[in-house]
Length: 294
Image (spheres, rainbow, N blue to C red):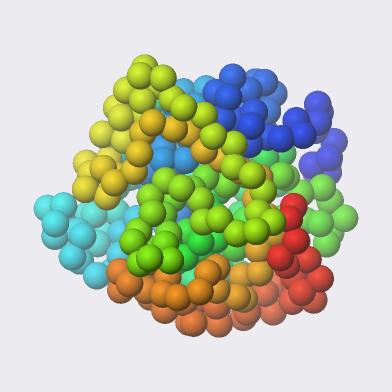
């Protein structure tokens, strides 16, 4: 396989701005890999851009179905497998609505809320998909304490790119989309980035009425997630170039959103992150680069 740097032409200086414009160069879209935690995350992230992504590959870290059957029963599913099947069917419906094909999706198959238990495995899985798709740009989650699977997916993308760099190969650029986090006042923030000094500036764009309507139609395919998706604003699209995170430190002080929701412990997540870095042989590399903007 040729190095990723053999792909031409070069990426734009600000790929986040290019994607937010909704009129990016088709060669950029052909090199795009979308790596997210759950079905529906891609629609929140990219919305009205999705119909243009007919050459992109979509990777899902989990099947969206927790072992705890509370969500499954709320959706009318008796088992975890049935709920996972329902979530995949919703994704396929969205793909059809957007003019995409289900064959563009790749599934890592981890249960919802359990990606943290397979961080090194997930990073190698993402690396393989980067190589197979010859991606020059990855869109994924930020590290902001919203959901443990979002954190694990962000870890996997950044670690996969670090592994490529350590092998002397060019890694793709990383762009991230906001999801949700816990504000300092204790309220949940949906569809906006967690701000820190030195973070890359988000690129935002107001969506037209037609673009909002398209995003609304795509999100409507995910009926089992309707209550959560209704919390996200539709008026704007926002992306930013990913910073280099230190996954061994909390993304912010105070309680994390997923701790408040009872989805896991930040302390336990970070312990797993340290173990994943050791398993991948990235501990020293991470100490050298963590915290600096990409």
